[in-house]
Image (cartoon, rainbow, N blue to C red; front, side, top):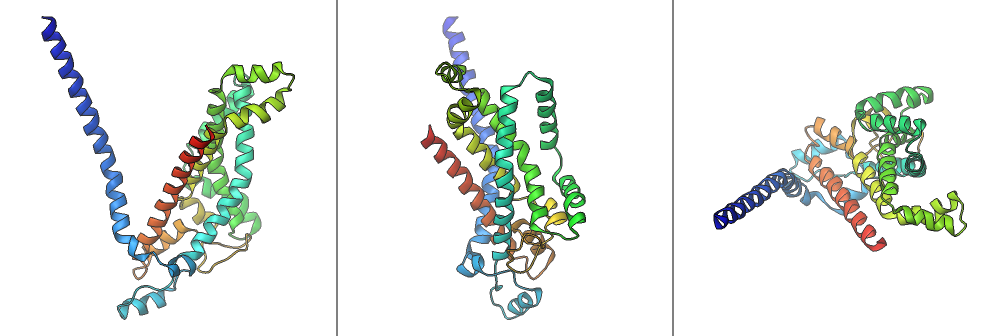
Length: 287
């Protein structure tokens, strides 16, 4: 009887293990299918011109297609615009998000902290298109122009709750003894947070920042209402500017530029993969 029960338990354990493996494999199928499709269609578009030249006009693309030649130009204007808006949003979102996250972790029982935490969750769940519309009203209308500033504000609003939540959760899992030891040595609460707790939580916070960047880098809807787009490489932050997601949308709506969709999509995937691998390596080294 005991042998029978033992054999049944072993059989059930193996069945559960195989079920989990099969379901995990099924989960990975869409991911690998997307990666294969984008890589297969977009790898041959990668060239020096693709990363250094702006988007071609529809007329130039039509001429190239009619002559059986590769479409000239690239996505340099989108790459420049993406990095400008990301840099501007990161400069504001990272310190604001970290400070807010530290406050929520240190004062989790206060009513104000609970209210801020609840509003953070609401902001994190707000659709990106609504954030784009609100930013249009707050920034584009007063400035009377689409601009990189407006686009960076929209990205900042989307990044902020992710950084706040990652900072708060990372600070909460730090050992209480770490803070107690710093206070016992005569350090003030502020100095203990800045010199002991934040460095100890750097890995989790940095990972949260990179995940926030990965989250917003592919957003299109908010940039359509704020940055609008531009066919040339532009460095002015108070004028309309392009971004890689905007270029993908423009390519989709132009029959002669549709082939460039795959190269731009592959660039976004590679960049996001690079961010994730960088986060893992830095966290591992920091630990």
